[in-house]
Amino acid sequence: MKKKYDKLGGISLRLINTLAIIVASLFSVLLLISIYLLANGYHSLNDYTLEYMNWEKNAEGLELASDYLSDNVRSFVIQEDKKFLDNYFNEKNVSKRRDNAINTLEHRFKGTETFESLSKAMEKSVALMQVEYHAMKLVILSNGSDINLYPVEIIEYKLPDNEISLSDEEKKDLAIDLVFNDYYVNERSLITESVEKAVESLDKLLKDNINKAKEDLKNIMVFQQVIILLLILFLISFFVILNISIVLPLKNGLNSIINDNLLKVEGIKEYKYFAQKYNDIRIKENVYNNMLEYEAEHDKLTGLYNRAGYDLICKDLDLNNIAYILTDIDYFKLVNDKYGHTVGDLVLKRVADTLIEEFNGNVYVSRIGGDEFSIIIKEYNYQMNEDIRYKVKRINTKLNKPKGNVPSVTLSFGVSISEDEDTINTIFKKADDALYETKKNGRMNVSFYKN
Image 1 (cartoon, rainbow, N blue to C red):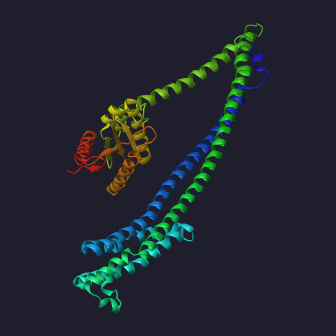
Image 2 (image 1 turned 60 degrees about the vertical axis):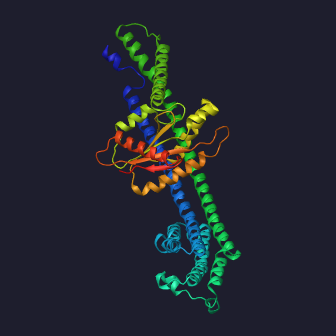
Image 3 (image 1 turned 180 degrees about the vertical axis):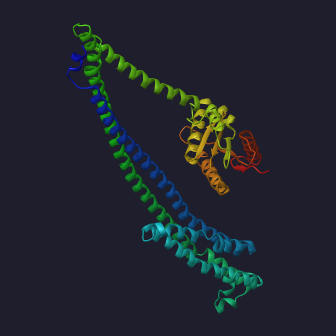
């Protein structure tokens, strides 16, 4: 019997197994490569977007600094309060936002339309400083102050002889005219236009890079889909070969040879049906389990982590260097009372979407109560405090404008920064105390917990 068994023709199990391992390994490598390329493309797109936001912030910082200088020189000329002059020279010589913006963007954009526009704005801003020095010195001379108490730029600035001989009142009037006349206003407008032109160039650059990245990601996804399709075809072919060439001959053929019975073909459809149903059940089971797990940890209305998901996050959360932000909707009960709970739900959804837009990256955003949300920022440092204030302002600016059928609302925020010996409960309590401070001071703002 054994000799007859050994002489059976057909493809061997060893060959089938070897081919299956080779092909499966090949598909696995190709899939891993496509996944890596897809992830790398996504991270590159995300990194470039964040880098662009920093570029744009620097570009706009030049305009803000220039505006700040103008505001303080005008305030000094009118009110003659030295603090405005001190603010002016602190910005010029210490903060140096204009210089920082130019230095930051020069390395990346030198020779481009973007940098030329910013350089033009900087040149005009620097040129206007001569007018501003002129006006400030006139005011100082008009009020009889000791010129030696003022910055060297003012001391060294030379006035025309005909202006030195003017009366105190004439000097004051001339100083006011210098920083409010048409020339000054027009130059300020040109600075704004140059910065806006630079920002527009950055926008175009971002769009071009995003479109290129999208095209690259699309090509990678097509490649991945082709690999998956080929893998599916391989699996189908493998199971067909498995049934026809191995299962049926080994089960029926070997038994028939040993027992000297005729080969029987029953059971082929049952096996195929079993294999297909088994695969379908497993796929559906995985989808169903994933869906249950997602729904168990996420709020159905907003898509954020719900209380259960929040508790799971907090259970394994490393409390070193985290910021805990607690926020709720100001007067949300009035929204429900006035518009109904359906509109209230739309408000909650809009708030959630806005929080996700502003707080992204290494962040957990959860809805932990009716209109109460938490934002946990990992790897936090105190230099990010101003960023939080900026985001809070942006969020309230967005939400304070009605959108379609969704009425305007505002949010109050409380922030606590983790310290040694803190637990998640103490961090929450501190954030809650800070939120209470915000509400006490008029809402629609943010407070940081102070010991």
